[in-house]
Length: 321
Image (cartoon, rainbow, N blue to C red):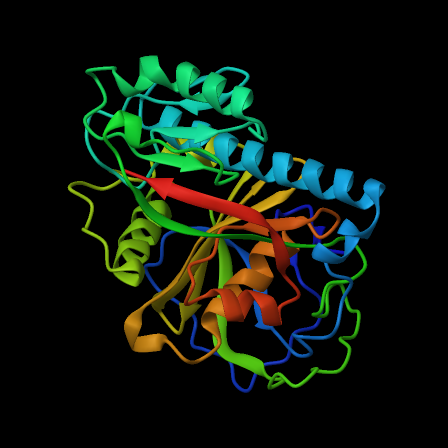
């Protein structure tokens, strides 16, 4: 398991590298997480989807889906409150009036709606938020992909599959001095020259923010902390990770820890893609809480990467705007 030393340095076991980068100068202060060893990624592990054979297994999978939805809502709460916004939660929805478009949803479903009556209640409960004039853009994550939200004048923009990987003993990479299993057909290698650090101050968060939007091809922040405000660093559940190659910030990820480890914001600079950095940042994000299942919402392009790391389908989601 990962261990956190008294000086707050998080260690990921003995992780070999081909050479050491020169000592950095002028970097924002951060704490070392470790070097990214992805040897053995892709080893066969018990699948999340495989638990659906029995009624007990289906119940376990439904619970994990609910925990994933709750994690997404909690990550949004931490992020939006840090920006000075006022999110709200009821039994059906997480909502937050958004004065301007940004990367966050304005509404997230936090309960399933398997029946017609359930779906009608969900739509009724979303109505006040959808009609709130303080929301400039209605952007909804239907975390079970069960609702038709066209009645609110929005359209289904994207859909996909939640992915999850089990815990604790099936991590397909070495942690805390352990050894990895066979590569299972995936190139087993050490990501060279990637130093992964936890961001702990406002300067580091501003650098993280700039790199993240470049990696995603999104608009740059209007001002520092326009997307990720320093208040998130006061939330012990939030882990902001930066990947450095020499003195350049080239990759990033985030983990939000509740009953599950929600993984967010995995991105790499276009100039550094194809080097295993996204794999390394995902490994580091999962290793923040190796005793808990990891969950994420991948893009279709990124899904094969996560499947190689032992993530399996959990359920569907859709995005509406």
